[in-house]
Image (cartoon, rainbow, N blue to C red; front, top):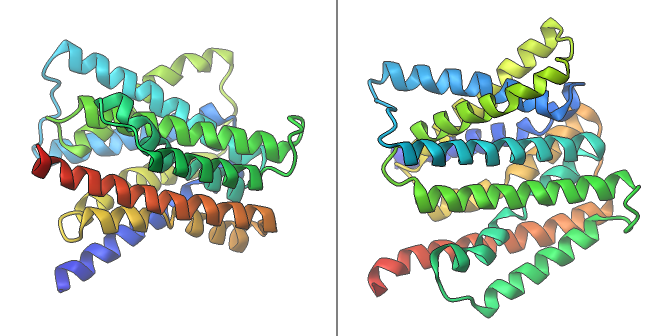
Length: 293
């Protein structure tokens, strides 16, 4: 019982930190690529030190694996850049809610990645999420900032789904911390050339915020999430992860005074409910797989 309580505490702290990360798009008046570069730099540095002192060798076993990690780093960079861009041009609520479409993208794309049979349930959940996104969007005027934010947030959800599927397909012989380390490291290297356009001036406050984002909202949150899985079921973890936008919207209200519109709340409920349903369905598929094979 004590271990389960510890696991629940760990995952809620992890999801809370993940939700808090979205606010840094408002806290920092930096381009999205600069925020992501700072986040991935501090995260990869921290994860690398953890692996070193824990005597876990993160050595890449083959050139093919190195290429896969480079690809994953690129997708991660695109995912976080579109995520912070969505928040900067709209609101924290819109960015987090539309990002939460990712479990449905996973459910919808999984049959193509793993040659599994497509089901009517996948089509049903995709239609529900599309309806939720339409509710969030105030109009189909692409000059509207909320519409732009919703589209970028949905792209963020899509790229995160691709990242999750690539992780499942190609990275099976490395620890989660090692995978996170390489993804953040290569994302940092991929974003470095953007500095040629000019690095924005950083204040001491900006530096500390980027360090907090990388250390606590990325490296620590990832570590706590993984550790919690040793004490609680993965299905419970996936459902708890759906609280990320709830925590984020609450923090945005308390710290930024952002109050989500009724359309955003209603669309968010549709998206989160469908995402939780899709996550439960996905876990059932994974658990049924070995028994049927």
